[in-house]
Image 1 (spheres, rainbow, N blue to C red):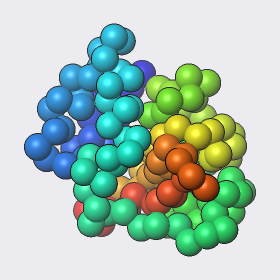
Image 2: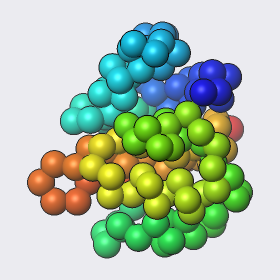
Image 3: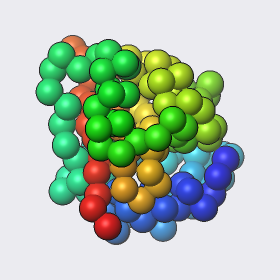
Image 4: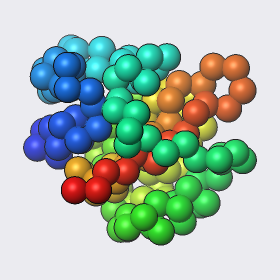
Length: 138
């Protein structure tokens, strides 16, 4: 786990009122799931909506999402904060990471540029889960 990178993500994309609490939870082995749970149904209260760009449907192809992220400046490697233990807290190739995040059914944030660009997939309810680019001009 990269605490410095995760702090940048929280400070950039999470609402100010919960940032300190989210960082406490992310950095605790026992509480990490609590932070990830905040990204389930109430992600619009957890993430800053002004930086969320919904990806139009159909949007379930990891290759297409990778191309879209590269158009916004993503590199070859990324870092994930995810329910999926296979990718959580790891730096991986962008496409590999997206293949494990897209369609997993639970939330993931795939960080391309820590304080500027990420992919977010919410929890799947009925139908496909909401998918967003998190983009911040700094």
